[in-house]
Length: 607
Image (tube, rainbow, N blue to C red):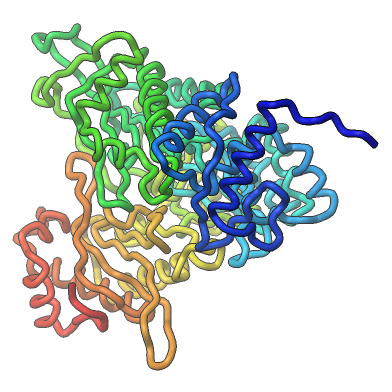
């Protein structure tokens, strides 16, 4: 059968693409023709022709790629993949692969993530599906529907994530699209929840019901969510991108750890703006790379958040690094340009200047309540309360999900609110339904109470489900909680975060105690272990923790964490001195000396 010949533009593109492959070396075995295979740990730098940019929503990305090529640089494999076959143009191929029960191979693993399907081999020979749930808010029918999908197509459980989201695992190759289409039936989506895209938009979990909040963040998160879903040009960024809205309530959203953080403030008379509620905008948070988002004094009215976010993201699309994955986050554009130059580019795109006021012109926000995401708390609405349910390291069995959905339906408004602390909240419960709800939560094998160590325990997926992780973080987190509860009576909340790799999904650097997984030499082999940081913080006391120990064996971590907490409780000035303040008073050598005096020195090397 004769084939239609390529036109001149297509020939130029293909020639340039193949030249790039030749420059990078031979294609890896198993790659599809014209598509570079991408294996773990191997990300070849490739060149493309600079003549192939096409009109349409992808043009801005092609133009950005072409600028790097014109400067003599080579695009990474992921950029080649997005250009050669955009992930949103391959649904037919995804269906064909599902019908033949094949998982994606090579660079297609990356493309599938655009649809929310993550092939997580070798940790598990299956898909993981991650959703998009703006502001972490679900109806009871959606929550129960997730349980049905996870049970029918997955492993019968789901995880609450550190972006107030849901993901579930053990999905067979032929069931991936059944999951995606089933989510659409529920009014949910997984589109853009992975790879080089804007991740789930987070917001205050008690939005609309918080006695202290300045503004309900749900409409803002929802507006940005749908804006992203309906603008293809907002997909395929240089790397992933996080956005959070903090409405000024009692529960932290960790906005300062995001690429863009909108933090609600009240501005009084005399600040040069009409008095009212605004958002201070902070940029460049990425705690895994050691940075907290910076405040340059920019304030925007709530109605302007969408336009400002869109402009910030577009400047990143046009200027983010397409040649080095390690430097492809917003932080590195800000490091190169400086924040003021970046804001000038944003203002130029908006066509107007943005207001700047000093932090001192804003009223102090109500203090964060560290354990307000657990237990029974009165709402802004008289006669109603919310109940924060403790979910051990974020894992829920499908039966528990259905039980919680039914409790929300029968005892509340049917609303489930996920939090960045890997637990959830059932809201709008009348006073006369609180006891029933508490009993039914206990009957589901969960609790509305948690110890002060367990309430602040956060752990990423770990190496049982993630190929990047070096340790079984969830199991080790529970072991730490069990040990501390058995040996120490804490009287103040403490956050302990365990993350499996440098991606820092569990935000280890902002924990009171943070554990970053590593491999530790043990005789002739290696065992799972951790580097241990102390003194991180969030909110008004946002801070990157400092390393105290390296290469602590996982089996020793519970005793080491207990020792650190015991030294704190023994040597703090008073009960009012929290852990972060205590650590700030002592350098690493002083803390190590105190631990040695207590006889609880780490088995690893002191930093």
